[in-house]
Each structure stands twice: as C-alpha cells, then as structure tokens.
Image 1: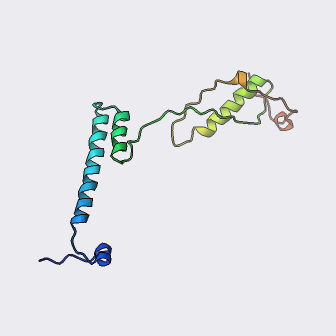
Image 2 (image 1 turned 120 degrees about the vertical axis):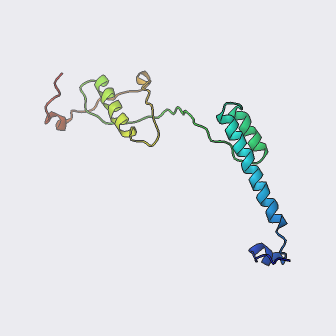
Image 3 (image 1 turned 60 degrees about the vertical axis):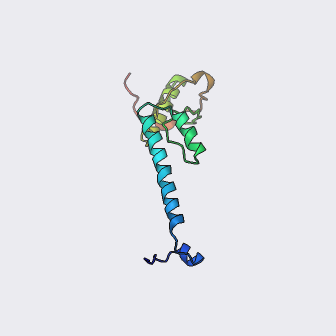
Amino acid sequence: MTEQPATPDTIATGHTDTAGRRGDTELQRLRRLIREQLAGAVGEDRLDITLANGILAVCGLPELPRRWTVRIGLTFICEVTAATDDGAFDTAEDAIAAAVTDAAYPIDIDWDGREHLQAAPGGIDHHALDTPPDPA
C-alpha cells in the first residue's frame, strides 16, 4: 500500500484516506464545467443570461458577469467665468466633460437638465478681466 503524504487534514484526523478530497475536487470540476457550459451557451446566444444566472444561483455558483449601462443623475457644482447663464452652462459642461473623459470606462454625458437646474450669477471675475476675450 502506498503511503499518502501528510496534510493538515490527515494530521488532524489521523486518516490518510483522500477519497473526500477527491470528491471535493470532482465537485469543483463539475461546478467549473457547469459554469463554463452555461457561459458558452450564453455567448453563442443559445441561452438567455438571466436564465443561466438562475441556474447558477440554484447550484450555488456566482452569476455570469454582464455589461450594464447605468444612468446616474449627479449634480455638479462648478464655478466658472462667463457673461451669460448659457455661457456658464456651456463652460461648466466642458469642464466636467474634460474631467470624466479620462475614466477607465466609457462615459457618455447626456446634458439634459438645464431647465431643472440653475446658474446663480455671482460677482465680477477680476482675474478674467486680465485675459483678453476670445474672438467671436
């Protein structure tokens, strides 16, 4: 009979039978196979991803990842220099767009809320007076 190497399990229990570990390995292989087969069927449009994820959930396996388009409404408060409120909105939108275009994920900015937001005028920007205006 071949001696099995000592492992933390065999030391703790005093058993050298590895059938339990083989069963775990076979179960892990079966779980991986189920997930791979379902992912392949979804990728080939033979199975809906929601149904596949339901099967995976019943088997106690993690769901397949999917791409999401998320629409989040955020309020940005940005101080800009402009002559009119439309100019202020345009300048703020440009500044915000420039800040988020370097993100790791593609972001589409949909400016659809000017009527629900406000542009509060402030005092004169003396620093802007030191720079020549852009030619119109």
